Length: 355
Image (cartoon, rainbow, N blue to C red; front, side, top):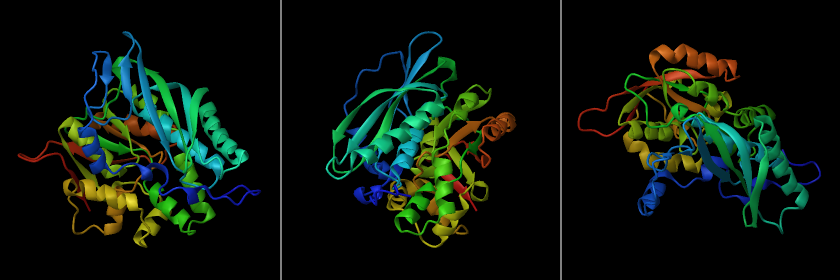
């Protein structure tokens, strides 16, 4: 999992890896609450109001620009794999809005005195490989000398204004569909402990480097109301964002949530991430946990996902079409996991979990 010619382990430089190094949701909300409001022109279709995946700016009647940026510290030791994962994760935000990527800019921060040029070059090669797969160029970027390795992309895409899929347009009665199984954060924790075998690492790469380009097809389906990707705040956190933005609650059937088998085993053995606990501390009060459900399942719901799956809210009549689109695109684990509901009288948005 490192270059044969170089024993350097990228994760030794980072205090957290992948989307697990995101600022905790509670602290982030406090920081953003202090940020001054900027200009909000009528062309800005999606801004910061609902913590959506990307900004969307209407260019004309038929086109809107989707703009996003995402970068993080290493989640794996292999530099090429790190680049692939980071690039796949960054482009996911465009797909989550229903957009088609058109180009990217690279964001590179490396400890120049500690990493040789060939290692840094492999990170960039990994990112470029994913962008070629997505059919877009890396047209520029910016680099700095920092203490921890950082890599990611600015992603730009296009979408028809009427096909923008926000995280705030779910409707009561909608079915929730998750595109990828949970557990990437737990696998990364096992990797750091030296407990992840080759099969587990292959699973980790399989999901973190699978482009969510199915979002383009999903946005074109009638009955798909809302969409987001599950990343650093875990399934529970990003579903809460849909609930709050849509002024609704949600019900999740824990037995229907797809899990990476190795991650479920590690979670049952107590292998979890610190970010999972921070996530739960931030929003656990709004996710009442059933007594009949084991704690390890809770850890998976708050597990930070790097390059996680799309979470779709759609009419029940659209469910078959949504699942068919996922499965045809190679997302074999995609499954219906719950539904959106009206909020209880006098209560805010909640995610009710059913054992």
